[in-house]
Image (cartoon, helix red, strand yellow):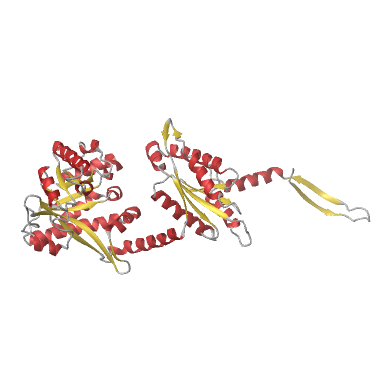
Length: 469
Protein backbone atom coordinates (compact mmCIF):
# COMPACT_ATOMS: atom_id res chain seq x y z
CA UNK A 1 0.00 0.00 0.00
CA UNK A 2 1.26 3.46 -0.94
CA UNK A 3 -0.02 6.95 -0.36
CA UNK A 4 0.27 8.97 -3.61
CA UNK A 5 -0.25 12.67 -4.27
CA UNK A 6 -1.27 13.40 -7.89
CA UNK A 7 -0.80 16.89 -9.27
CA UNK A 8 -1.70 17.41 -12.94
CA UNK A 9 -4.29 18.31 -15.54
CA UNK A 10 -6.30 16.54 -18.19
CA UNK A 11 -5.36 17.02 -21.82
CA UNK A 12 -7.64 16.91 -24.80
CA UNK A 13 -9.65 13.71 -24.80
CA UNK A 14 -10.43 11.35 -27.66
CA UNK A 15 -13.53 9.12 -27.86
CA UNK A 16 -11.46 6.21 -26.53
CA UNK A 17 -9.08 7.74 -23.98
CA UNK A 18 -8.30 10.55 -21.55
CA UNK A 19 -4.73 11.81 -21.09
CA UNK A 20 -3.31 13.34 -17.92
CA UNK A 21 -0.04 15.18 -17.52
CA UNK A 22 1.70 16.02 -14.24
CA UNK A 23 3.58 14.34 -11.38
CA UNK A 24 3.04 11.49 -8.93
CA UNK A 25 4.62 11.90 -5.50
CA UNK A 26 5.09 9.08 -2.97
CA UNK A 27 3.91 10.53 0.38
CA UNK A 28 3.74 7.20 2.26
CA UNK A 29 6.42 8.29 4.76
CA UNK A 30 4.75 11.54 5.86
CA UNK A 31 1.35 9.81 5.98
CA UNK A 32 2.69 7.04 8.27
CA UNK A 33 4.34 9.69 10.47
CA UNK A 34 1.05 11.58 10.65
CA UNK A 35 -0.76 8.41 11.67
CA UNK A 36 1.90 7.71 14.30
CA UNK A 37 1.44 11.20 15.73
CA UNK A 38 -2.32 10.72 15.77
CA UNK A 39 -1.90 7.44 17.62
CA UNK A 40 0.63 9.00 20.00
CA UNK A 41 -1.86 11.74 20.83
CA UNK A 42 -4.33 9.03 21.88
CA UNK A 43 -1.88 6.98 23.94
CA UNK A 44 -0.70 7.26 27.53
CA UNK A 45 3.12 7.21 27.25
CA UNK A 46 3.71 5.37 30.52
CA UNK A 47 1.34 2.44 30.06
CA UNK A 48 0.67 2.34 26.32
CA UNK A 49 -3.08 2.41 27.01
CA UNK A 50 -5.57 4.87 25.58
CA UNK A 51 -5.29 8.19 27.40
CA UNK A 52 -8.11 10.12 29.04
CA UNK A 53 -9.02 12.22 25.99
CA UNK A 54 -9.05 9.21 23.67
CA UNK A 55 -11.23 7.24 26.07
CA UNK A 56 -13.72 10.08 26.40
CA UNK A 57 -13.78 10.50 22.60
CA UNK A 58 -14.46 6.81 21.99
CA UNK A 59 -17.13 6.73 24.66
CA UNK A 60 -18.83 9.76 23.12
CA UNK A 61 -18.98 7.97 19.77
CA UNK A 62 -20.41 4.82 21.38
CA UNK A 63 -23.12 6.90 23.06
CA UNK A 64 -23.95 9.04 20.03
CA UNK A 65 -27.61 9.26 18.97
CA UNK A 66 -28.58 6.44 16.67
CA UNK A 67 -25.98 4.01 18.01
CA UNK A 68 -27.97 1.13 19.43
CA UNK A 69 -25.18 -0.93 21.03
CA UNK A 70 -25.29 -0.89 24.83
CA UNK A 71 -22.14 0.36 26.57
CA UNK A 72 -20.68 -0.28 30.02
CA UNK A 73 -17.90 1.58 31.86
CA UNK A 74 -15.81 -0.12 34.52
CA UNK A 75 -14.08 2.40 36.81
CA UNK A 76 -11.00 0.77 38.37
CA UNK A 77 -8.94 2.11 41.28
CA UNK A 78 -5.83 0.31 42.52
CA UNK A 79 -5.96 -0.47 46.24
CA UNK A 80 -2.85 0.34 48.31
CA UNK A 81 -0.95 1.77 45.34
CA UNK A 82 0.11 4.74 47.48
CA UNK A 83 2.11 2.38 49.73
CA UNK A 84 4.40 1.37 46.85
CA UNK A 85 4.74 4.97 45.71
CA UNK A 86 5.66 6.14 49.21
CA UNK A 87 7.96 3.24 50.10
CA UNK A 88 9.85 2.75 46.82
CA UNK A 89 9.39 6.11 45.11
CA UNK A 90 7.62 7.39 42.01
CA UNK A 91 9.81 5.50 39.54
CA UNK A 92 8.82 2.19 41.12
CA UNK A 93 5.21 3.38 41.20
CA UNK A 94 5.37 4.07 37.46
CA UNK A 95 6.68 0.55 36.81
CA UNK A 96 3.83 -0.86 38.90
CA UNK A 97 1.28 1.12 36.86
CA UNK A 98 2.76 -0.24 33.63
CA UNK A 99 2.57 -3.77 35.02
CA UNK A 100 -1.03 -3.22 36.13
CA UNK A 101 -1.88 -1.95 32.63
CA UNK A 102 -0.54 -5.16 31.08
CA UNK A 103 -2.68 -7.22 33.44
CA UNK A 104 -5.75 -5.18 32.57
CA UNK A 105 -5.15 -5.71 28.85
CA UNK A 106 -4.76 -9.44 29.47
CA UNK A 107 -7.96 -9.62 31.53
CA UNK A 108 -10.08 -7.60 29.09
CA UNK A 109 -8.71 -9.04 25.83
CA UNK A 110 -10.70 -7.97 22.78
CA UNK A 111 -13.96 -7.52 24.74
CA UNK A 112 -13.29 -3.86 25.53
CA UNK A 113 -10.75 -1.04 25.52
CA UNK A 114 -8.61 -0.07 28.51
CA UNK A 115 -8.03 3.60 29.34
CA UNK A 116 -5.67 5.18 31.82
CA UNK A 117 -7.97 7.79 33.30
CA UNK A 118 -5.44 9.40 35.62
CA UNK A 119 -3.07 8.46 38.45
CA UNK A 120 -3.83 4.89 39.47
CA UNK A 121 -7.35 4.99 38.01
CA UNK A 122 -8.35 3.15 34.85
CA UNK A 123 -11.47 2.69 32.74
CA UNK A 124 -12.62 -0.28 30.75
CA UNK A 125 -15.13 0.63 28.05
CA UNK A 126 -17.05 -2.25 26.54
CA UNK A 127 -19.99 -2.65 24.19
CA UNK A 128 -22.02 -5.65 25.24
CA UNK A 129 -25.21 -5.69 23.15
CA UNK A 130 -27.30 -8.64 24.28
CA UNK A 131 -24.48 -10.11 26.39
CA UNK A 132 -25.65 -8.63 29.72
CA UNK A 133 -23.07 -10.66 31.67
CA UNK A 134 -20.02 -9.16 29.95
CA UNK A 135 -19.38 -6.18 32.31
CA UNK A 136 -19.53 -8.34 35.46
CA UNK A 137 -17.48 -11.06 33.79
CA UNK A 138 -14.77 -8.56 32.87
CA UNK A 139 -14.75 -7.15 36.40
CA UNK A 140 -14.27 -10.61 37.87
CA UNK A 141 -11.55 -11.37 35.33
CA UNK A 142 -9.69 -8.23 36.42
CA UNK A 143 -9.93 -9.20 40.10
CA UNK A 144 -8.61 -12.67 39.29
CA UNK A 145 -5.71 -11.22 37.31
CA UNK A 146 -4.80 -8.95 40.22
CA UNK A 147 -4.90 -11.78 42.77
CA UNK A 148 -1.24 -12.57 42.10
CA UNK A 149 1.25 -10.31 43.90
CA UNK A 150 3.16 -7.66 41.98
CA UNK A 151 6.93 -7.73 42.11
CA UNK A 152 8.69 -4.35 42.03
CA UNK A 153 12.41 -3.81 42.64
CA UNK A 154 12.73 -7.19 44.30
CA UNK A 155 9.80 -6.59 46.65
CA UNK A 156 6.38 -8.23 46.47
CA UNK A 157 3.21 -6.19 46.94
CA UNK A 158 -0.42 -7.22 47.11
CA UNK A 159 -2.21 -4.67 44.93
CA UNK A 160 -5.89 -5.34 44.41
CA UNK A 161 -8.59 -3.38 42.58
CA UNK A 162 -11.89 -1.76 43.51
CA UNK A 163 -14.27 -1.63 40.54
CA UNK A 164 -17.51 0.23 39.85
CA UNK A 165 -19.75 -0.60 36.90
CA UNK A 166 -22.23 1.67 35.12
CA UNK A 167 -24.28 0.85 32.02
CA UNK A 168 -26.05 2.96 29.43
CA UNK A 169 -28.70 4.13 29.18
CA UNK A 170 -30.03 3.38 32.69
CA UNK A 171 -26.99 4.78 34.53
CA UNK A 172 -26.21 7.63 32.15
CA UNK A 173 -26.57 8.66 28.52
CA UNK A 174 -23.55 11.00 28.37
CA UNK A 175 -19.87 10.08 28.86
CA UNK A 176 -19.29 12.12 32.04
CA UNK A 177 -22.57 10.97 33.57
CA UNK A 178 -21.77 7.31 32.92
CA UNK A 179 -18.22 7.68 34.27
CA UNK A 180 -19.48 9.48 37.39
CA UNK A 181 -21.96 6.69 38.07
CA UNK A 182 -19.20 4.09 37.73
CA UNK A 183 -17.02 6.21 40.04
CA UNK A 184 -19.73 6.28 42.71
CA UNK A 185 -20.09 2.49 42.48
CA UNK A 186 -16.30 2.09 42.74
CA UNK A 187 -16.14 4.11 45.97
CA UNK A 188 -18.94 2.02 47.42
CA UNK A 189 -16.93 -1.09 46.55
CA UNK A 190 -13.87 0.40 48.25
CA UNK A 191 -15.93 1.36 51.31
CA UNK A 192 -17.18 -2.22 51.63
CA UNK A 193 -13.67 -3.60 51.88
CA UNK A 194 -11.91 -3.28 48.49
CA UNK A 195 -10.90 -6.04 46.07
CA UNK A 196 -14.47 -6.28 44.75
CA UNK A 197 -16.81 -4.87 42.13
CA UNK A 198 -20.10 -3.06 42.54
CA UNK A 199 -22.82 -2.09 40.03
CA UNK A 200 -24.28 1.40 40.23
CA UNK A 201 -27.84 1.56 41.59
CA UNK A 202 -30.56 4.06 42.41
CA UNK A 203 -29.75 3.63 46.11
CA UNK A 204 -26.14 4.61 45.45
CA UNK A 205 -27.33 7.65 43.50
CA UNK A 206 -29.47 8.72 46.44
CA UNK A 207 -26.56 8.21 48.84
CA UNK A 208 -24.36 10.27 46.54
CA UNK A 209 -26.87 13.14 46.58
CA UNK A 210 -27.05 12.93 50.38
CA UNK A 211 -23.26 12.98 50.64
CA UNK A 212 -23.06 16.03 48.40
CA UNK A 213 -25.68 17.81 50.50
CA UNK A 214 -23.86 16.85 53.67
CA UNK A 215 -20.54 18.06 52.26
CA UNK A 216 -22.01 21.39 51.18
CA UNK A 217 -23.61 22.13 54.57
CA UNK A 218 -20.65 20.76 56.55
CA UNK A 219 -18.23 23.07 54.78
CA UNK A 220 -20.24 26.09 55.98
CA UNK A 221 -21.07 24.82 59.45
CA UNK A 222 -18.23 26.55 61.33
CA UNK A 223 -18.90 29.93 59.69
CA UNK A 224 -22.65 29.54 60.32
CA UNK A 225 -22.09 28.78 64.02
CA UNK A 226 -23.91 25.44 63.75
CA UNK A 227 -21.67 23.39 66.05
CA UNK A 228 -21.87 23.14 69.80
CA UNK A 229 -19.98 21.17 72.40
CA UNK A 230 -21.46 19.03 75.13
CA UNK A 231 -19.35 17.68 77.95
CA UNK A 232 -19.31 14.26 79.55
CA UNK A 233 -17.84 14.32 83.06
CA UNK A 234 -14.87 12.17 83.94
CA UNK A 235 -15.34 11.19 87.56
CA UNK A 236 -13.39 9.75 90.43
CA UNK A 237 -14.68 6.17 90.56
CA UNK A 238 -14.41 6.03 94.33
CA UNK A 239 -16.24 9.26 95.18
CA UNK A 240 -18.29 9.97 92.04
CA UNK A 241 -17.03 13.57 91.93
CA UNK A 242 -16.24 15.25 88.60
CA UNK A 243 -12.51 15.77 88.03
CA UNK A 244 -12.40 16.49 84.27
CA UNK A 245 -14.66 16.57 81.21
CA UNK A 246 -14.53 15.30 77.65
CA UNK A 247 -15.74 17.68 74.93
CA UNK A 248 -18.10 16.04 72.41
CA UNK A 249 -19.23 17.83 69.24
CA UNK A 250 -22.84 18.17 68.12
CA UNK A 251 -24.13 19.62 64.84
CA UNK A 252 -27.55 21.15 64.22
CA UNK A 253 -28.22 22.30 60.65
CA UNK A 254 -31.27 24.29 59.54
CA UNK A 255 -31.94 22.01 56.56
CA UNK A 256 -30.64 18.64 57.75
CA UNK A 257 -31.67 18.90 61.40
CA UNK A 258 -29.57 17.47 64.22
CA UNK A 259 -26.81 15.26 62.86
CA UNK A 260 -25.22 12.64 65.15
CA UNK A 261 -21.40 12.56 65.07
CA UNK A 262 -21.26 9.14 63.43
CA UNK A 263 -23.08 10.69 60.43
CA UNK A 264 -20.61 13.48 59.76
CA UNK A 265 -17.25 12.90 61.48
CA UNK A 266 -16.07 10.20 59.09
CA UNK A 267 -17.26 12.23 56.13
CA UNK A 268 -15.39 15.28 57.44
CA UNK A 269 -12.23 13.17 57.73
CA UNK A 270 -12.62 11.99 54.14
CA UNK A 271 -13.09 15.50 52.73
CA UNK A 272 -10.52 17.14 55.01
CA UNK A 273 -13.12 19.44 56.65
CA UNK A 274 -12.21 17.83 59.98
CA UNK A 275 -9.14 20.07 60.11
CA UNK A 276 -11.17 23.29 60.38
CA UNK A 277 -13.77 21.61 62.60
CA UNK A 278 -11.09 20.18 64.89
CA UNK A 279 -9.46 23.58 65.25
CA UNK A 280 -12.81 25.09 66.29
CA UNK A 281 -13.33 22.32 68.86
CA UNK A 282 -9.88 22.87 70.40
CA UNK A 283 -10.41 26.61 70.76
CA UNK A 284 -14.00 26.33 72.06
CA UNK A 285 -13.15 23.61 74.63
CA UNK A 286 -10.28 25.71 75.97
CA UNK A 287 -12.49 28.81 76.15
CA UNK A 288 -15.10 26.86 78.10
CA UNK A 289 -12.59 25.50 80.60
CA UNK A 290 -11.30 29.02 81.13
CA UNK A 291 -14.88 30.24 81.80
CA UNK A 292 -15.48 27.37 84.25
CA UNK A 293 -12.32 28.13 86.17
CA UNK A 294 -13.11 31.83 86.28
CA UNK A 295 -16.44 30.86 87.89
CA UNK A 296 -14.78 28.73 90.54
CA UNK A 297 -15.15 25.32 88.88
CA UNK A 298 -11.66 23.88 89.18
CA UNK A 299 -11.60 20.93 86.79
CA UNK A 300 -8.22 19.33 86.19
CA UNK A 301 -8.51 19.48 82.43
CA UNK A 302 -10.74 19.18 79.38
CA UNK A 303 -10.28 16.31 76.91
CA UNK A 304 -10.61 16.73 73.14
CA UNK A 305 -10.62 14.06 70.43
CA UNK A 306 -8.13 14.69 67.63
CA UNK A 307 -8.48 13.06 64.21
CA UNK A 308 -5.51 11.47 62.45
CA UNK A 309 -6.22 13.88 59.58
CA UNK A 310 -5.39 16.79 61.87
CA UNK A 311 -2.04 15.10 62.40
CA UNK A 312 -1.44 14.78 58.66
CA UNK A 313 -3.10 17.89 57.35
CA UNK A 314 -2.11 20.79 59.59
CA UNK A 315 0.39 22.07 62.10
CA UNK A 316 -1.37 20.58 65.13
CA UNK A 317 1.20 21.96 67.57
CA UNK A 318 0.58 25.51 66.37
CA UNK A 319 -3.20 25.08 66.65
CA UNK A 320 -2.94 23.72 70.20
CA UNK A 321 -0.58 26.51 71.22
CA UNK A 322 -2.99 29.10 69.80
CA UNK A 323 -6.00 27.57 71.62
CA UNK A 324 -4.17 27.52 74.96
CA UNK A 325 -2.76 31.03 74.56
CA UNK A 326 -6.08 32.62 73.59
CA UNK A 327 -7.69 31.12 76.72
CA UNK A 328 -4.66 31.76 78.96
CA UNK A 329 -4.44 28.10 79.99
CA UNK A 330 -1.38 26.00 80.76
CA UNK A 331 -0.74 22.93 78.60
CA UNK A 332 -1.66 20.61 81.47
CA UNK A 333 -5.26 21.87 81.22
CA UNK A 334 -5.73 20.11 77.88
CA UNK A 335 -5.89 16.39 77.15
CA UNK A 336 -5.73 15.22 73.54
CA UNK A 337 -7.23 11.83 72.72
CA UNK A 338 -5.91 10.04 69.62
CA UNK A 339 -7.07 6.82 68.04
CA UNK A 340 -4.59 4.00 67.51
CA UNK A 341 -4.55 4.81 63.79
CA UNK A 342 -2.30 7.77 64.53
CA UNK A 343 0.34 5.37 65.80
CA UNK A 344 1.07 3.92 62.37
CA UNK A 345 0.35 6.78 59.98
CA UNK A 346 3.72 8.53 59.84
CA UNK A 347 6.15 7.49 62.52
CA UNK A 348 8.82 10.27 62.33
CA UNK A 349 6.25 13.07 62.27
CA UNK A 350 4.22 11.34 64.99
CA UNK A 351 7.22 11.14 67.32
CA UNK A 352 8.12 14.78 66.69
CA UNK A 353 4.58 16.09 67.17
CA UNK A 354 3.96 14.03 70.31
CA UNK A 355 7.25 15.25 71.78
CA UNK A 356 6.41 18.92 71.12
CA UNK A 357 2.95 18.56 72.62
CA UNK A 358 4.31 16.84 75.70
CA UNK A 359 6.94 19.56 76.13
CA UNK A 360 4.03 22.03 76.26
CA UNK A 361 2.55 20.00 79.13
CA UNK A 362 -0.41 18.68 77.10
CA UNK A 363 -1.73 15.32 78.32
CA UNK A 364 -1.67 12.70 75.55
CA UNK A 365 -3.98 9.69 75.61
CA UNK A 366 -4.67 6.84 73.20
CA UNK A 367 -8.46 6.52 72.87
CA UNK A 368 -10.39 3.23 72.52
CA UNK A 369 -7.24 1.24 73.22
CA UNK A 370 -7.53 -2.36 72.06
CA UNK A 371 -10.14 -1.79 69.33
CA UNK A 372 -7.72 -1.09 66.52
CA UNK A 373 -4.08 -1.79 65.83
CA UNK A 374 -2.88 -1.97 69.45
CA UNK A 375 0.67 -1.26 68.29
CA UNK A 376 2.44 -2.11 71.55
CA UNK A 377 5.78 -1.27 69.98
CA UNK A 378 4.75 2.40 69.80
CA UNK A 379 3.57 2.58 73.40
CA UNK A 380 7.09 2.20 74.73
CA UNK A 381 8.48 4.81 72.34
CA UNK A 382 5.84 7.54 72.15
CA UNK A 383 5.77 10.15 74.94
CA UNK A 384 2.14 9.52 75.92
CA UNK A 385 0.55 9.80 79.35
CA UNK A 386 -2.35 7.39 79.33
CA UNK A 387 -4.70 4.93 77.67
CA UNK A 388 -8.46 4.91 77.47
CA UNK A 389 -10.03 1.50 77.97
CA UNK A 390 -12.63 1.02 75.25
CA UNK A 391 -16.29 0.66 76.18
CA UNK A 392 -16.28 -2.32 73.81
CA UNK A 393 -14.60 -4.30 76.60
CA UNK A 394 -16.05 -2.45 79.59
CA UNK A 395 -19.61 -3.36 78.61
CA UNK A 396 -18.94 -7.08 79.13
CA UNK A 397 -17.45 -6.95 82.63
CA UNK A 398 -17.62 -8.49 85.12
CA UNK A 399 -19.53 -11.44 83.59
CA UNK A 400 -17.81 -11.96 80.24
CA UNK A 401 -14.52 -13.78 80.84
CA UNK A 402 -12.98 -12.58 77.57
CA UNK A 403 -13.72 -8.91 78.34
CA UNK A 404 -12.42 -9.36 81.88
CA UNK A 405 -9.18 -10.83 80.50
CA UNK A 406 -8.73 -7.95 78.04
CA UNK A 407 -9.36 -5.33 80.73
CA UNK A 408 -6.88 -7.02 83.04
CA UNK A 409 -4.30 -7.21 80.26
CA UNK A 410 -4.67 -3.52 79.31
CA UNK A 411 -4.52 -2.53 82.98
CA UNK A 412 -1.33 -4.55 83.33
CA UNK A 413 0.23 -2.86 80.30
CA UNK A 414 -0.70 0.61 81.55
CA UNK A 415 0.62 -0.12 85.05
CA UNK A 416 3.89 -1.57 83.76
CA UNK A 417 4.53 1.42 81.49
CA UNK A 418 3.50 3.96 84.12
CA UNK A 419 0.50 5.15 82.13
CA UNK A 420 -2.81 6.44 83.48
CA UNK A 421 -5.81 4.30 82.52
CA UNK A 422 -9.30 5.75 82.11
CA UNK A 423 -12.40 3.66 81.44
CA UNK A 424 -15.27 4.82 79.25
CA UNK A 425 -18.75 3.44 78.69
CA UNK A 426 -19.45 2.64 82.36
CA UNK A 427 -23.17 1.97 82.67
CA UNK A 428 -23.67 -0.21 85.76
CA UNK A 429 -22.60 -0.27 89.37
CA UNK A 430 -21.10 -3.74 88.83
CA UNK A 431 -18.81 -2.33 86.11
CA UNK A 432 -17.70 0.53 88.36
CA UNK A 433 -16.93 -1.85 91.22
CA UNK A 434 -14.94 -4.17 88.92
CA UNK A 435 -12.87 -1.30 87.53
CA UNK A 436 -12.16 -0.01 91.04
CA UNK A 437 -10.85 -3.47 92.03
CA UNK A 438 -8.74 -3.41 88.88
CA UNK A 439 -7.06 -0.24 90.12
CA UNK A 440 -8.66 2.37 87.85
CA UNK A 441 -9.21 5.76 89.42
CA UNK A 442 -11.17 7.66 86.76
CA UNK A 443 -13.99 6.75 84.38
CA UNK A 444 -16.96 8.07 82.47
CA UNK A 445 -20.25 6.75 81.17
CA UNK A 446 -24.02 6.87 81.41
CA UNK A 447 -23.87 5.58 85.00
CA UNK A 448 -22.68 9.06 85.92
CA UNK A 449 -23.94 11.36 83.17
CA UNK A 450 -24.34 11.66 79.42
CA UNK A 451 -22.82 14.51 77.46
CA UNK A 452 -24.54 17.71 78.64
CA UNK A 453 -24.29 21.44 77.85
CA UNK A 454 -21.65 23.38 79.77
CA UNK A 455 -24.15 25.07 82.11
CA UNK A 456 -25.64 21.73 83.13
CA UNK A 457 -22.25 20.25 83.97
CA UNK A 458 -21.62 23.23 86.22
CA UNK A 459 -24.92 22.68 88.07
CA UNK A 460 -23.76 19.26 89.25
CA UNK A 461 -20.16 20.23 89.99
CA UNK A 462 -19.13 19.78 93.61
CA UNK A 463 -21.43 16.88 94.45
CA UNK A 464 -21.22 13.18 93.53
CA UNK A 465 -22.99 12.29 90.29
CA UNK A 466 -24.28 9.07 91.81
CA UNK A 467 -25.07 7.48 95.14
CA UNK A 468 -22.26 5.02 95.74
CA UNK A 469 -23.06 1.63 97.21
